[in-house]
Amino acid sequence: MAELKFTYYPHPILRNKAKPLNISDRQNPPDEIIDLISAMKKICNKYDGVGLASQQVGLVLPVAVIGIPIPTGREDKFPTNRENNSTEIRGESGNSEYENGKYRLVGIVNPKIIGASENMQFWEEGCLSFPKLYLNIKRPVDIVVRAWFDDTGKIQERILHDMAARIACHEIDHLNGIVFIDRVEPYMRLKIKSELKRIARQHPEQEELNI
Image (cartoon, rainbow, N blue to C red; front, side):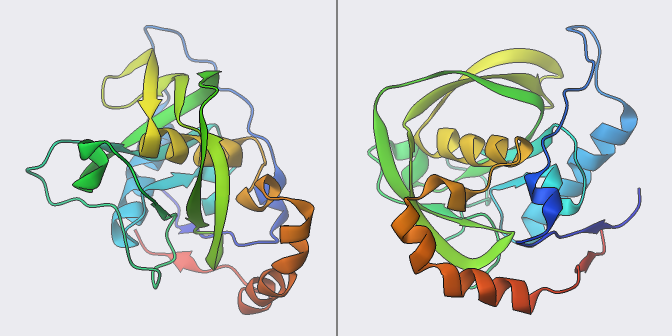
């Protein structure tokens, strides 16, 4: 497939909402979508990312990859270094699945949040499209997502908790043209205005990714 390019704030594509693909319960997405998911996973691995949406690589498709926690025994870990430009999500959790930091990347197509807990919490988030900007974002602790998942090849409804729920919310927001700065109070938008100007100055052109 063609080389993918990062898109940074304030690129207008980040505000574009993806339309659902026509996929039946017994049908996988087109090969081009499967290839895109594979390429996006490579980007996440390269930049220690735990999530990525199509708009962040210059496309407007209902496709994202999200980090799902797994038991210990694999070397994948949630990033803890602010020096990388990945979508980082950190915070406290009482769930040992998250405390060990292990995760696997799962591709999702046509994701939709169909349920969410009333229990909400703040957590610090970063985003590939907003390098070195970190904000405390309030999101539900648990959600139910309906999507086509590439690890099963099926359309399913899954309950996601804590870290996985937050990552999914962040990426599904992207697919709907919403970025994480939209989730903060107006006073915080004013407070980070200089940071947003910095990002815009530093990324006047798009960076090519060699996959």
